[in-house]
Structure formats: C-alpha cells, structure tokens
Image (tube, rainbow, N blue to C red):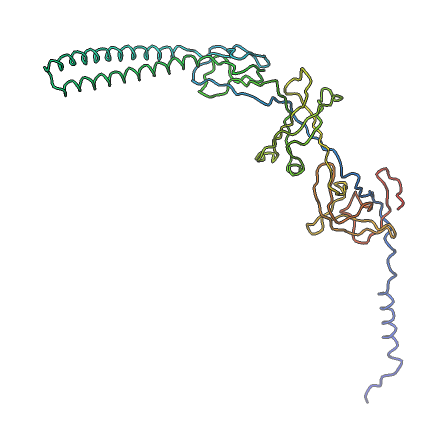
Amino acid sequence: MPARHLPGSRLPVAFLAVLVLAGCSRPAPPPEPPRPAIVARADAGESGRAVYFSGELRARHESQLAFQVGGKVARRLVDAGARVAAGQVLATLDPDDLRLNLAAAEAAVASARADAELARSERERHAGLLARQLISAAQFEAKETALAAAQARLDQAQAQRAVQRNQLDYTQLRADRAGLVTRIEAEAGQVVAPGQVVAVLAQEDEIEVEIALPEAQVSRLRVGDPAQVSLWSDADQRIAGSIREIAPDADPASRTFRTRVRLEQPPAGLALGLTARVRFDQAGAGHLRVPLTALHRDNGDAAVWRVDPDTGAVHLRAVEVAAFDEHGVDIAAGIAPDDWLVVAGVHLLHEGQRIRPIDPDNRPVRF
C-alpha cells in the first residue's frame, strides 16, 4: 500500500527555510565616521612668488694659464690668492734642454750662412767668366740656382732659431692681465705637458654669481631678468643683479643649466668663491598655487581631492599642472580660486568619503 504524505510532514522543512533566511539578513553597517583631514584653500595670491637659488661668486673672465712647451717646473713664484700685475712671472720651467736646442739652431744658422756666402762668391766669379764668354749661360744659371737654394736654407735655419728662442721664452709663465690667482695646479719639480693648466687667473672688475638652474625654471627665466643677491656671510646686504647668460644645454650629470647672474654695482672687497643666494620674483600667470602634498595621481594623471563645503565629502578632481618646485605646485586648470583641498594623506581617501576638516594646527575649519 503506497505511503501517504501527510500535510504535517512539510512543517519541519518550512521551519528550517525560515531559520536560514533569518540568519542571512544582517543589519546594515553603521556609516563610516568622518575622517580628520588637513585642508587648505587654493589661493591665487600665492601665484606670484619668489624662488631662490644658491650660487658662488665668480669672475666673469677667468684665464687658465699654461706653458706652451713641456718640461719640469723649476719654480713657482706665486700662491693661490695672490694679486698679480700684467706680465708678472708666475712660474718657470727648467730651460736646459731648450737652451741646447737653441744652441743647435744657432750652429745650423752659421752653417747655412757659410754655405750661402760660398754660393754667392761662386755666382759672382761665374758672372765674370760669363762676361768674358769663358763659360756657357747654363753653367752660370746652375750657380744662380745653387745660391738661391743656399739662401733658402739660411732662411729656414734662421726661422728655426727664432722658434727655439720663442720656446726658451715660453719657459716663463706670465700673467696675461692683472688679476687674482684663484688656483695653482702645479708645483716645483712636477713635469707638465704643453697646455696643461698651471694657474687660473681671474679678473676682479666684473663679478658674477654662478647658479645651477633646474629644468623646471628654464622656461620661466630669461636673460636680462632682474634678481636680488645676498651673501651668506652678510645676509642683510642686498645687491641688484640680472641674468647675463643661461647655458644652451644642460649638464649631463645634474641636468641643470649653468646660469650667470651679473652684479650691477658690487661693493668693494668682495671675495671670489663666497656663497651667495639669488632671488627671482616670478609671476604665476594666473595659476593657482597649492602645496606639493595636495597632488594625487589618478591612473597616472594629476588630481586633487576637493572638499564639498555643503556635505564635507571629498571628490577627486583632475588638474593641469603648469609647474612645480620644492615649494609647491602651480595649477593651470581644474580648480577654482578659494576651493578647499585636502593637503595631507591624500592617498588614504576614497571618492565620496566624508572628512572632518582641520587646519595644520589641528584646529577645526568651518566652510
């Protein structure tokens, strides 16, 4: 007899289903509490600012002095820091070998002169014989040719003697102008090659500051732009200056551009090599200035977290960066003046998150 399914047999199954559904329905999580975040305002007033660079006082004209001949340094007559006059001897080479070369050149001149005198007397004697028709014209022309060759050898020997005399004079290294000896690169007893730098001479009439200009500033500064220079040894002193030169190519190691700033009216007694601070006042061309810590990356693009003043929620806003340096970022587009931005911990936020705004001194900010 087939089994009969009683209606009451379905009750345990239904009861279990109710228990399972009740276990799956959990209460909604509480809303995330507002996160404290430091905020600041994008301020157009910061777009006009000063940038500073450290540099060194240098002479505009510096000569690297070297011997024109090689040899052993016999004497060094000046030290670094000495002020010298034009033509003053700075160092000398041992002249013994060059004196021997000059003596050999003198002997070669004497020999060539004797040959030339003999060729001249032969030519005069054959001229008389030709006048009496005792020799042919061809024989006389041969003596004339021999005289011309002897005279050419004499001229060559005299020129070589002049070279040797000059080389003997080159054993004295002289200052080509009045100035300050800033470096000495050779000592007595050292053997130097022709052209090897022995001393560096700087003129003190034009003093400049040499700075290294980073790539971000090359497009912002031009030759002739004004500058203010102050010395680290006297920070209260201000010297007016202007950019005289910006190198056309970057240094391969530092990727900076060598820049020279001319001092308009340098005070007397400035020592070369002093450390200086150069200030340029720049206009931001209408850009907004925000701290570096406010900048965020969204899929490789620059962005900032903008705070909605009505809800306190943050929203990621793409921006266009005009320039940046160690002091902040210039924003060309993407935000408006007086926008409130998160400027610390931007990598910890997510879209729509509510924050509790505070200033850098941990005081509440009211929008």
